[in-house]
Image (cartoon, rainbow, N blue to C red; front, side):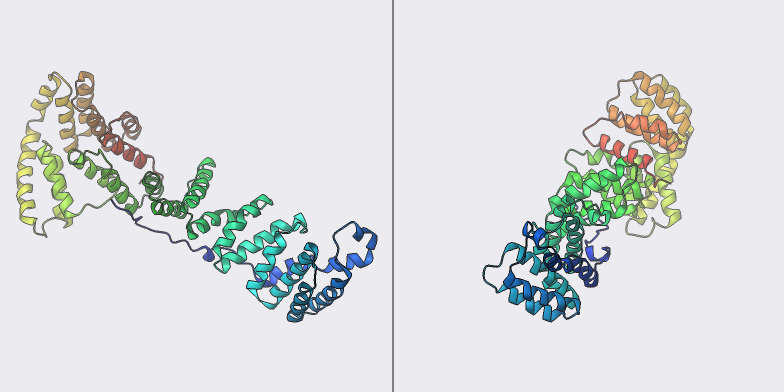
Length: 434
């Protein structure tokens, strides 16, 4: 079984994420540092009921604050290290130190130290709730920029819980999950994005669907992959998607490939796939073998006229087949009237349906439909799902798309006929169908 998506999208979060600079982070970090010590000095009564720093840490913290204001980032960092060495440092004092360290490290351009300080600040109970969302978002963006995807994955749910609703980060999250090896999570989140698009009556984009397909394929979710591949084929109309979708469908357990091979070829041609010489020759041979010489003749004539046939090792055999089917088609056309009389007098619908396909192969689609209607009325069909599938094909050829959709919906066979009817329906409803 094929296991590769023809157009594979590699997850590269950094290329589309709006970056956050350390200068921006410095502003975010410094916004909460300046008032901390000033408020304590100005309002000791209020500070008594709020978290506060002790006298032994206040002086070096003030010095660090002044150094930070003066742009002396390394000096501020040294002062903060000294504060952390003071015995019995409290959780609140660690929060203040972390807040200052975040601003100083960001100002200095020390990304690693800034990220470590930022994580510590966000995780404390002392951070004002209004700041939790923007600082979480800053941390996620910074982590992605520096390929620390595990940190970004860990922080995104925290960001959402704090009210974060960035569309950019929402779309990025499943890609990060895939990047960190959580393919099941990636499938879940990509699928949720697809579902949201469909619920809003929007066609999911090719990139989104491709990412979902890649994650499903990595997870070996064959059913999910095939469903997404169908969406890709239907919404884009691209031949690579259609080719793999049809091939994978034919590989499913229980698919009557030999009996339905001609129908597979017909579907491939309808969706715009170019058949190689071997398949064109095989299709013509199969059509001629079941009494459809006109369909076979057209295939061979088109193949030789386009240069697909007549070049390889099978050229002589193809020419011989063309001569035989051309003669058979002429005889067939000459006897159509007698054949139609015989079909209408037949005891069941098998002969009328066979004649209908022959008439359609000769280009007489409306006449074919009239004969097939007689066959439906007679009943007694040996393979009713095949008959319905063929009726739908002739209706498509006749331009009766609505009728064809109704016919394909009635095909229920578990032998591959219903699969083909479903793909015909997908094609006929495709926004990319020309």
